[in-house]
Length: 488
Ligand code: HEC
Ligand code: HEC
Ligand code: HEC
Ligand code: HEC
Image 1 (spheres, rainbow, N blue to C red):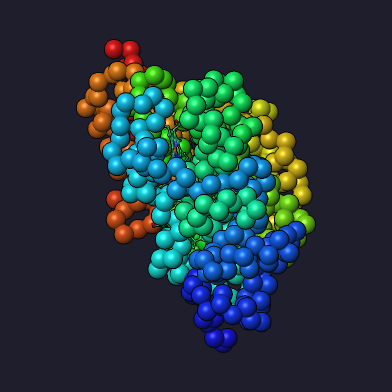
Image 2 (spheres, rainbow, N blue to C red):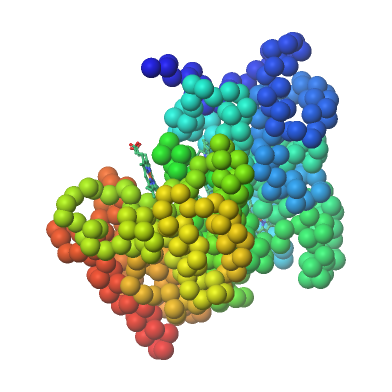
């Protein structure tokens, strides 16, 4: 048996290598440079001139390749990134406490982000024990340096995104994780205008995006911004390999994550000025997540068609987890029914992101689902072709409730109703014990039993299990209760 590779995570910082520009340093950087194909010379020059600072840390050199690998932030925006610290002056966004006197900002955003927002932790996360364990499990004795670099670049793409070095201003700090400009856009050209009187007008006229600004006030843009990382995008993915190695599965739903995020903006005021905010977030989230998942599928399929050696195909993370991960017993309700519309025994595809979505052709993305469930070797070319043609239709919440096909579907329905409930409260309905208790019941039915990482949920009656019909009834019950409250 080959011995396990020593590589168990991130390389250590090395200042030694920086001082002596030796052959081993050249070797160390060569595989990094290999990823930045178009700018080898530029990279080496830039590298030698900044060698004295912390950029000599091989981790950060790696980080610098991450965006070249996935291209999202760099390719889309020509402007330079200034770094979070450029926002952090105490008169700007670096105040200790929120200050209610100003119309556009409470001026404490930087401190709030640093202190409370999980996005500021991304870099530390990649250094922690779980990250090392994940990377250790993914490592193979046959890995070469380029393979490791690519794998790590994937992690950086979401946890510590790096614009290409040519787009970093000298103030940009390479360990800032998911910082201000990752969500709000590179600030080089808008940092000036955004503190002037005319800024509101520039935004209103739609001219801010030409300056690199990402207007997260727009719910659609907000949803797309989150989905790029929380669903994934071409070149940055949490696939089944990562999940099996210990990475949390990404099952993103915008309203739930929006609610969880400690906010540096005036959420209450935003809700007051738009009592439909929550339902708009739900719709925008459904569409943005669906579109991101389709893009990811297309990218995976194209890779499988063009570079089959590079690609895992089909990607298990796109299917219903619990169709494969369940206890093996006979007889079982699983042998009676199939939640998949394809070949018997195939897990259902797209059960999380497409549970509530339809395409413009009507039936719930049927052609794509049929291809993906045809067998364990769907034709990648055909899948890419069908995926390119998909046009998603904005879902209606009223149509969201039905007999759930599986746990993913039931949970998506639950989250839709919770968004409807929040919308009622934002519109001034007082909270209601009946509604609260029904939400609690559903939560309990959907929650995984303590110490388990799959649902207790079954499709037939049995000890200590919850049936599909019971969950369906609870969903209908909650919906009726909401209807009643709406009419009162
Ligand atoms: C597509 C984006 C994406 C990629 C690629 C990615 N992650 Fe993550 N990671 C996330 C998100 C989002 C979370 C938070 C999960 C949640 O709560 O939904 C997370 C969570 C984690 C956590 C758990 C953090 C905690 O505090 O418990 C670790 C550890 C982690 N990631 C490490 C890695 C490593 C190592 C890699 C590369 C092998 C990687 N991630 C690749 C998006 C990503
Ligand atoms: C994960 C994405 C994300 C990150 C990171 C982020 N923001 Fe925001 N920010 C938002 C969203 C979403 C809003 C709400 C919509 C809006 O007002 O644009 C917002 C709103 C704001 C507002 C308007 C505040 C208000 O009260 O209306 C300011 C100012 C701001 N952000 C500054 C910052 C600064 C400074 C940083 C870095 C320290 C930062 N943001 C990091 C997503 C982000
Ligand atoms: C550049 C990628 C990226 C973007 C854009 C992004 N996130 Fe995240 N988000 C992450 C990563 C990575 C983590 C995990 C952080 C960690 O623990 O290291 C995370 C964590 C979170 C968490 C904490 C999850 C938990 O389990 O505690 C919430 C909530 C969240 N994000 C919401 C949002 C929302 C809402 C948006 C859009 C406004 C957004 N994120 C945009 C990458 C991103
Ligand atoms: C097509 C079937 C299939 C699907 C769908 C599937 N998996 Fe897996 N999964 C497997 C197999 C096979 C293994 C490897 C089992 C082994 O080698 O012990 C595995 C391994 C794992 C492991 C590691 C378990 C361990 O004990 O080491 C985790 C965690 C996991 N899967 C989670 C998921 C999640 C979450 C999803 C849904 C996003 C999912 N799987 C979808 C078949 C599947």
